[in-house]
Image (cartoon, rainbow, N blue to C red):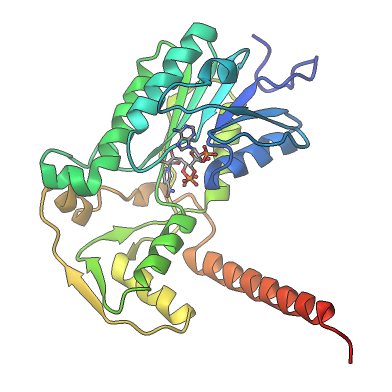
Length: 291
Ligand SMILES: NC(=O)c1ccc[n+]([C@@H]2O[C@H](COP(=O)([O-])OP(=O)(O)OC[C@H]3O[C@@H](n4cnc5c(N)ncnc54)[C@H](OP(=O)(O)O)[C@@H]3O)[C@@H](O)[C@H]2O)c1
């Protein structure tokens, strides 16, 4: 295998990023491309190739198209994921990758995957995601391939999506005692790219954002920033997984290595949205018939 930190001499792409069209994967792709690497991206939809990027169509849930995606890959950064079934996706990827060779498999998991017990039906209904991430981690670690896994806390983007959805409700239920430590997806992408171009390291230290917030406090901050008023109702969630959340199993205060805060993220987003709105209005003005 070539030295993984150097681009291959023939310039061919040997890095596959699954989920390279998603929030994190897109940023990982950019980082790798900026490092002079050509990247292959797996997506369920066929897409046009671009500068330094090639797309392969495949579905990790069914295994369709995966063989072609992993062929010749020396590094696979596995960022594809969804709320359900990540263990199956990881299994299918591991199986195909093992048949294709011995690529360095880099996986992104979630802080708390090993500490949030998903035992009852109630746990599974609300927190099954954590169990599937843990099972996916095991599939990677037991694959026989060289591997690296990073666990991160929730990305700012996810928190924003949830906050926006919640803000549509007239009254917002928030799990009582829940806290979050959001991290910037681009900082996680930088770390993943660094890990991908380094030597396989197994389970590396967690990556969490700079501050811990109460879920209710975070939501209040979002409502304030978007000039909305909604009553927030604390809701007590049953089950062992929820209890672990209240105890902070989803946090990594000792690993608060992220730098960008939620407040900075929100402020940047507001500026970007305002700029886009102004550009749209200006564009409309230009298209209007002249008097
Ligand atoms: N979001 C967070 O707060 C957070 C925190 C810690 C860890 N993580 C982990 O980080 C990873 C990326 O999260 P994200 O927020 O960037 O996700 P995202 O924006 O929802 O993107 C998901 C990506 O997965 C791909 N994908 C989904 N199902 C697939 C399938 N069956 N076959 C192939 N590709 C599939 C999608 O590609 P196409 O639609 O193009 O097929 C998309 O690019 C996930 O593994 C997630 O568990 C996320």
